[in-house]
Each structure stands twice: as structure tokens, then as C-alpha cells.
Amino acid sequence: MKNLLCLCLALGLLAVLSACKTTPKPQPTTRESITTAVIDGSFLPDAQSAKSPAEAAALLPRLTAPGAVPDEALRAYVSCLRRTAYEFTEENGWYIPGDKDPGLPLFRIAVFDEGGSHALLVAYDALEEALRGKLSEGGAAWLAELTADGAENLWSYGYLQAPFDELAQIIVRKAAFETKYPGFISQWTEETPDWDYTTTAMDLLEEYLHGNKTVGHPGADFRNGPIDLEVRASFEGFLANAAYKDCVYYGMVRAVVDLLEANGWEYDYALREEIDLLLGE
Image 1 (cartoon, one colour):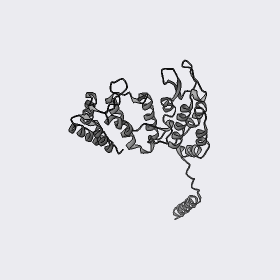
Image 2 (cartoon, helix red, strand yellow; image 1 turned 135 degrees about the vertical axis):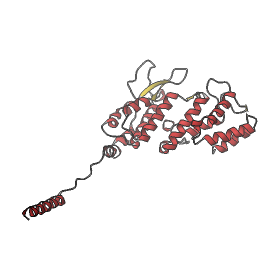
Image 3 (cartoon, helix red, strand yellow; image 1 turned 180 degrees about the vertical axis):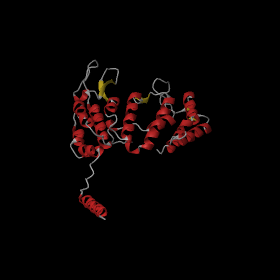
Image 4 (tube, rainbow, N blue to C red; image 1 turned 180 degrees about the horizontal axis):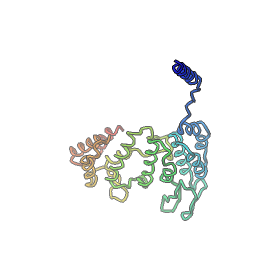
């Protein structure tokens, strides 16, 4: 009986202590902490007000501090890097000799014309390396896409310079990315600054389906007459590639190939209008 009484007293005391114990408040996760610090602090205004590539590059340590980088902060920073690189021109009084290192690890020097005019491009690969492991899945995929764009150099003087089959691969890759992460797509508009624009799969698809040739090929911007054999082979290879069948634009390529076949494999203005309708233009 005495042992039973002691057991009851012990259980009662344990219940009282449990009831009095204060439940600890949940602590914010690392991502929540860094999100509050970046978005609610001064980072976004500072990114928007940076006036030079040096000021933009100086913001990087605030993103590489412990914690995750929110998508909003990543997009604001990439926009900042693009803008300051775009505005870094001789017309604005800035000049970088071709043999001089600007000392800006997130940028690289580019030569845009035969006169040797120099400008800056964003080094997305360097940014990707600096933020590796700190981004959301979508943010990491977006930065990888930008890195690929920078490495491919798709355009030169307004013309495509990727081989036609390579262009098809890029379209499929971009379509897969944009389908999975639609929030990262920047469509071009008349009001979109050049520095804030990212080439989308649909932009490249228009060039592809119209059979526009690339730099270094005769008949660049090819629009009328028999289809170029390289272009036809790429279309047929696209449709025959099992890996491309899940591409959101596979059916559109199929429809254009059907139009071309019915038109004797020739382009003309009427066919161009039909392709534009398929593209929603």
C-alpha cells in the first residue's frame, strides 16, 4: 500500500511539472531568417539604387552570408548586375582597355564591334559558383539557365549563331525549364529594358520554325523558296528524337512540318502567316 501511494504521488508531481513547463516558441528556420533580413531590410533598395558594376559587386557578401538566398533577392541582384553592366558604356564615360582586368569578379569584358569597343557582361558562372547551395531549386535552375545562355552566345549582330540542331536542343531545354519554373520567365515587351530581358524558348522557336539561318551561313534570315536541307534535316530529327516528344512545343513543330510538306517543302509569305498563327502572333 505504501509503495502504491508513493507511485501515485510521483505521477501526480510529474503531471504538475509537465503542465507548468513552458512550450518553447518555434525558432525561424535559416531560410526564414535570411528572407526577413534580405527582403525587409535594405538589400532590395540598395540593389535597385546601385550605380556601377563595382557597387553591384559589393552587394554580393550580403547574399553569401550564412543562410539561404530567397528567389526575390536573387532576381533583384541579377537585375542589378545586368543593369549596371548594360549602363557601363563609353557613352556614359566609362572605358575599360581590352588588356586590363577590371577587378570585378562577377563581370567579364566583351568586344562588340570591329572598332574594339569594350563593354561588360555578367559572369553568371561566377555568380552561380558563389551562391551554390544557397538557392531554392527554382533559383538554382534559373541561374544555371542564365549561365548556359552566357556560354552559348546565341546572338551576334541580331542574328542567331548556334547551329540549327543545337538551337533545337536549347529550345527543348528552355521549354522544360519554363514549364517547371514559369515564375522565372521574362517575356520581352516594348517597355522591357534590354538589361532585364531573358531569351525564352518561344523567342527561339519563332526563329527555328521560320527556318532563319545563322551567322556565317548564306541566306541568313531565310524566309522564301525551298527549305534549306540543314533546316529540313533538323525538323525531321526533332520529330524523330524520342527525348523531344515531351517538349511542350513538339506538336507545334509537327504542325509546321506538315504545312511545309503540303507546300512542297517551300517557304513563302502565306506559309509564314500560317506559322505566325500557330505561334500566336
